[in-house]
Length: 339
Image (cartoon, rainbow, N blue to C red; front, side, top):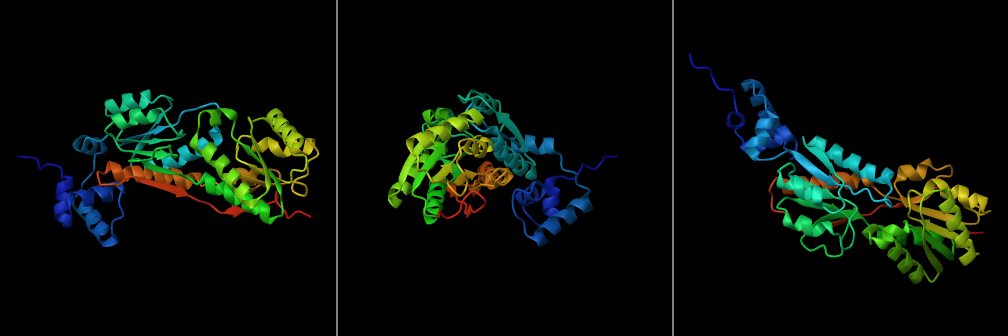
């Protein structure tokens, strides 16, 4: 007697009266399928006793069902925030039955090696510099890619990032509305600016432009993390601008120490100096005195980057695109109107 072959995805598609790709999308969740169509496919799966085999699907489609996530662990990067992006990307990938391979080589060599071996179907690149040395490597690879960050030349690339320029403008606008006229920007560590990391420079430039447009006195400083560095930057601020009454801070690793440093220097927040942080909301809310902040939506950006990548992995024609995600300012305890 001849044993009947196990039902295939093609059998399911025929029984449900749909295309093979529709069955694949129902199984993987990569596309939104209408409820009636999904019910027909699921009914056919149950009736035929079909059991999808992930390994067989990967072999048939020549896909690894793995994406690479490039996260160079530079000393000037705040790992707490980086891991929020990573967590969101991993969650989004798992939702469509994909694994994530973490790539930490700063020169792109790791990405090149795993792409050549067929170990990944696409890559999300983080911590993008204006003239990022990894981009030429990426251009040589025939795999889909999405950048979290904006390089100088975005032509032909798919990018998503927080609008740091507008975030700084929003922060300055809030301080101006509170009648603050002498404002300091405390930004990323000096190494981030030396590397020309796009988010650090865009935040500074947005601050300078907004302060200039508003006609207020302004000063820009960089700072390392830690209490000693926080005390030093507060001392420098008071030395160079004794009448400072507003601060915009874009340096997440500094935030846990800045309030204590201001207190030791006799700077009273918010009566004397109002402060706005550019950071994820959970960091702003965790401070002893919750920071007024323009929140960086790390989860949204990480999830959207993976969604953009999946559209490209599926082979659909996708034009180059650059998305900037904004966020509102949330007033909290560190900003009040000047007396």
